[in-house]
Length: 424
Image (cartoon, rainbow, N blue to C red; front, side, top):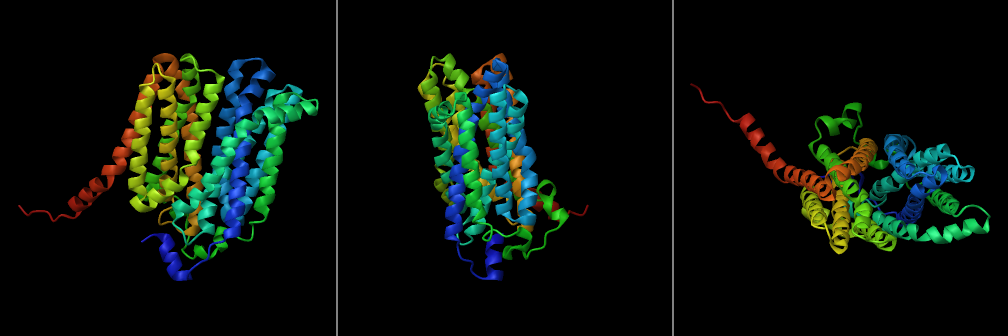
C-alpha cells in the first residue's frame, strides 16, 4: 500500500487545491520559457564576449553545476519553510542570474556570465521541483499524473522560449544595447513574474514538517535510506540519473552531427524544438502509464524506448530525417523515465523525508548531465556519433534489464536465504 493511501486513511480525504495548481502551472510555464530562452542565448553570448568558440560551452556547464549544487539546498528549504519558499528562492536567484549575464554581456566580461549561469541553474532546479509540489496540492490524484500536469505546462514555455530570441533582440536594439542582452532582460522579467505567482501559493504549500501529511516520523537515517536500504528509492535514483546521462550525451552532439550531414541552422532549430517538446508534452500519457503499469514497469519500458532512440541515432549516419525522428523518440523515453523515476524515488517515504529524496534525485540528474555533456564530445571526436549512440543504447539496456529482472532475482535470494538447510 502506498504512503499516499495510508495518509488519506489517517487524515481523511483531502481536497485538491485547484487554484494553487493553476498558479503552479503558470509558474512552470514561465520558468520553462525563461530557462529555454536564456539557455539558447548563453553560448552565443559567451562566444561574443570572448571571441572564441571554446568558451561557448562554459555557461551550459556552469548552469548544470548550479542546478546540481542548489538541489539539496532548495529541498532543505522546502522542508523547513515550505515548497513555495524553495520555488521562490530559485526563481529570484535565476532572475538575478539573468541580470548578471546581461551585465557581463554589456561589460564584455566572462566572469559575470559564468556566475549568472550558476544562478540560472537554481531556477532550472526550482522549475523541475515544482512537479513534486503539484503532487502535494492534488492528493486525490495519483502522484505521477499530478506531476504530469506541471510538466506539460513547462513544455509550453520551453518550446516558446527559443522563438523569442529575435523579438527580445529587437527589444534590446530599441534600448541601444547589443541584441544578445535582450534574452536576459526578458528572462529576468519573466522569472520575477513567476516568483510573484509563487507568492500566491505560499499558504497552500506549508513547511513539510508542519503539513498534515507529515505525521509519519522523519529521521536522519530514514532520509539516507535511498542509498542504503530503500530498494525503490535506489531504483528511482538510477532511472533519473541514467536517463539524463543518455539523453544529454546523445542530444548534445546531435546538432553537430546534423551540421556534418548538411543540415542548416533552421533544421537544427526545428529538431531541437521537437526534442524539447517530446521531453515534456507527453507527460500526461507518461503519468497515466506509470499509474496503470506501476512505476517500475513503466520505467523499464521507458528505458527500452531510450534504447530504440539510440539505435535509431546509430542508423542516422547519412539521414537527417532519421536523426530527427531519433531525437523525438529520445525525448519520449526521457519523459517516461522522469515520471516513473520520480514516482519510484518518493514511493513509501514519510512526508518529511520526501524533499531530501527529491533534491537527491535532481542532484543525481545534474551530475549525470555533467558527465554526459563532458564526455560526449570526446567520444564523438575519437570514435564518431554512432559509437556515442551505441554507448547510450548499452547504458539504457542495462537499466531496462535491471528494472525488469531485479525483483525476481531479489525474491530468489530471499527464498534461498530462508530455505531450511538439510542436515547431513
